[in-house]
Length: 83
View: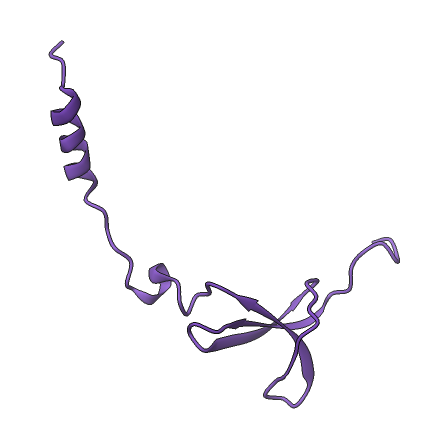
């Protein structure tokens, strides 16, 4: 790896405020805001809108679409030609 052309790879906290969930990972992302983490160190914090704690698929609240009903409604509306 060439020196001085890559961004810094450092610990960063990602926070999902809607689910009151945060996790510490490593990233090249930067932020002016900081947070004091559970280990007592200060890390940059990046706020995200959706995480695994708030996404419907991961929380089990995902809705299953009735695709068969949608296909039948399309066929009724636009007709199915007999071949």
